[in-house]
Length: 383
Image 1: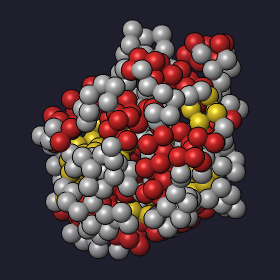
Image 2: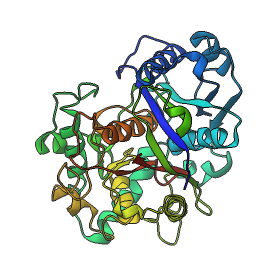
Image 3: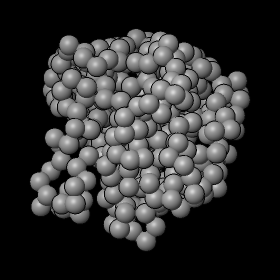
Image 4: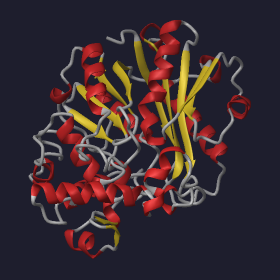
């Protein structure tokens, strides 16, 4: 077990399509909100953990929040796959004694500045693994995920409406969440079906949002957690995993193109560290960049059998009161897209008993960052 490490503060900016602020300003706002939540000051923080994709400088963060002692700073690759990895890096620094308290953060203007879904960020065709799909026209994440999505429907004999319950459930949660972009805007099946195709069988609402905003999370030791105001939430396990010969969102040449090769490694590590069987957790926050990849995660983490995930969702099992409440903040589909960091915040709120869509009985929670990419995951529990 990853004993002795807790999350004691969470913070965020507003989520929008045009923040009107720099990513540095967004990061500073989220970190300040996180420190307020924990009852902490900049003097209490001596470490930073973020993404290689984050454009904000640690020097600028330190200067802007007036952090007197920066002893540890690190960055995690693979975009969304690094979300829980930022917590893992912080936990290792704290356990080793390198740092006392670490802020993990992500700031992003992906609606008004860097649009991951546009295809503009695709490296040249001769660049490493990219040559395996760029040369055949798979220029965007949606185009690559669309191939997997189509094969899933073919293999299990499902209609192209099978993914709708994931989008509708996410928007149902978001409609009651004041922080969500789709607050008070639930999605009807008619609206879902009328939306344009992005990459068949993916419709518009099968794809995550592009958002502006920032999230910050404060991690410290259990012993120091007593000095902060926030209700401490235990990091029972943290893991990273990269499948053999894995390429993000493009497993179509594999023996089984529906396999998420990183998940067995995550499950093994999480269970070894925590002593908790992953499929027995009370709720989950799974990375919802595309609805079919939510289906595959549900099956391969063991929450339902292969080919059953779309029916599992259609039966209401992802709602509160169902077998596995999922992404109760609305997730990337309904709240905002911050590379999985807002999923960690929602897990903390649920375990504190402070969520807008509160689960009545929740003691253990799985958070997974991304799918079909090198991935990271957490098991969080109450103390």
